Image 1 (cartoon, helix red, strand yellow):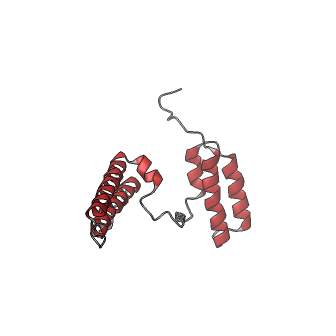
Image 2 (cartoon, helix red, strand yellow; image 1 turned 90 degrees about the vertical axis):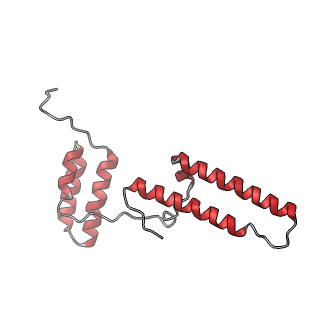
Image 3 (cartoon, one colour; image 1 turned 45 degrees about the horizontal axis):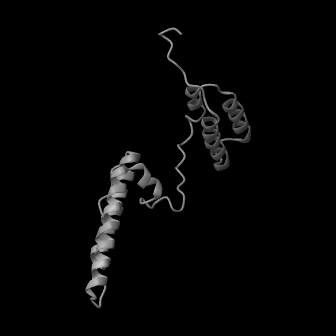
Length: 144
């Protein structure tokens, strides 16, 4: 391979499908005619390299990322698996929660006094997970 020619990546089916979905949504919004949609889709599926796919959607607005109904919650199993610091934080919160509840049960106090410390422990865990999720996406967290 010549050093002057940059290495090109071959387009995968998922790359083509992502561009095709953008074209189809533009067609359903009325931004493209049916003929334009068919022409672009045919060319997208015939494309071999990733750098060629961008030319089919340059005149179209970027699609908004569809969010799943539960995707706003930052504290998920995937987040705990992905971030070891968050996993350690969760283990500490659970250990302290168990310790506070056991102490409450042993002391025999009538009201459940560990409710406030448990609430604040949980809040710190959620804020930690939220900050981690914003850092992963490259955004700045919104202050509470």
